[in-house]
Image 1 (cartoon, rainbow, N blue to C red):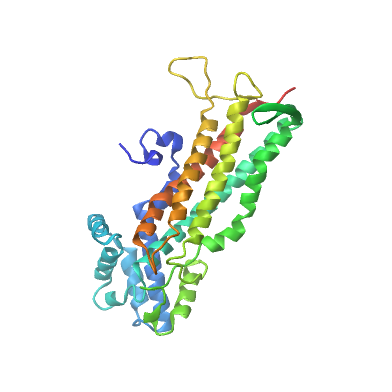
Image 2: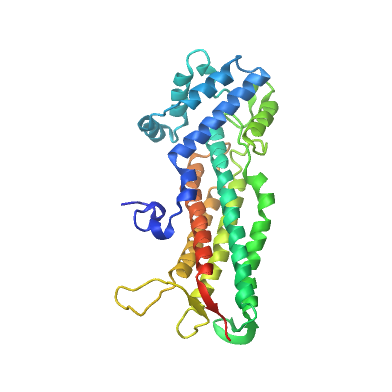
Length: 352
């Protein structure tokens, strides 16, 4: 039994996406957290805030580190997150000479948020690749069937004849816009989080900006300063996800309508079967795109709730993000995968 359909043993075959889900595993998260701590120790050693040799000692410890997951789980239950226990374990692995210098000037949120955006880098790469492929598939669909007529429908009623290319263009246009938005979106989302306990880096003796710049360069992230209570980068990202899911849902909804027996303006290969009616070929892929669009639209409101932080940091709003963002990401990736397969399965489309 699974709480989430995305990793459900059975339903995961319909709704899951192993490639994107891998970015949200415990192993991936801890690896990204260690990457932050190593880069921080090396940057602070370079600037002279921690003793010589600290960076090398932390890197060596992180390279062979085997976390006690049960202790991290207990720590999360006690502290609301696993970072205090993770730092305790990593300091012990680093040793008494350099362990106390680990995590100097940082706070738990710096680690968690930066580890998240480090994992969003491959997520954005994969979503961009899938989106570009889907756009190319729609271009191919237009080449095959674009000149054919189809009856335009407004308010679910026949309106005036259009070309099949006109309907495909309506599916493709928002996808192209969302693809074109990615270069500007990336640096706003892939931002280093580094603010220290209250967001001011006050423990770093005026060297905070220099360490932040070095840390961002080492991690290949934007040096965005502290956004502990400014969650707009992540809400912008999930807004992009919801828009993309919505565009895919519109495509799915149209295909499901066009596949109706009464309409018959699209013929799909395969299709879902029925346990009671052998003649049926249900447009499962198209229906699933509609479901995923509505799912992400629903969760987006939760991400907007996560904008409301109390003072310098909120535990409740922050935790809400952890519950929503991974599911929205996987749902979008699943939608792109399904939409590509659906496009490839269109055997015939439009009138003659």
